[in-house]
Image (cartoon, rainbow, N blue to C red):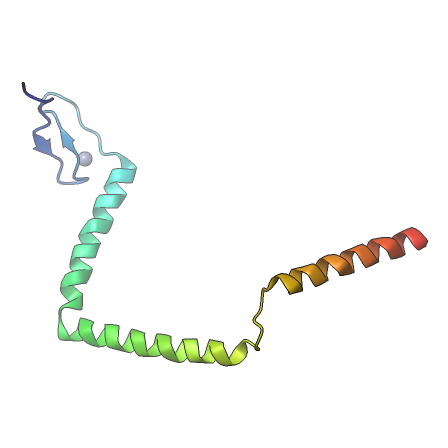
Length: 101
Ligand SMILES: [Zn+2]
């Protein structure tokens, strides 16, 4: 048994379609295919000396950035549940004050 017969591959979007079907590129598929192509080009570029250096440089910048972040965030951390709890308590205080007035 033959399955479907989607024997033509669109060079624009990479979709398979039947010879007797009118094919229109699906914009989402088209975008995905473009990204895949770019991805391939990026990988090729990363294999070059220039690409290798870019990766090394980005990695160095990233670790510098992470070190900086570590210095900026005080011990105990930001965004712990204690902080949001404090905010809530303040809100309730404000409401209580509003009632008193
Ligand atoms: Zn297409």
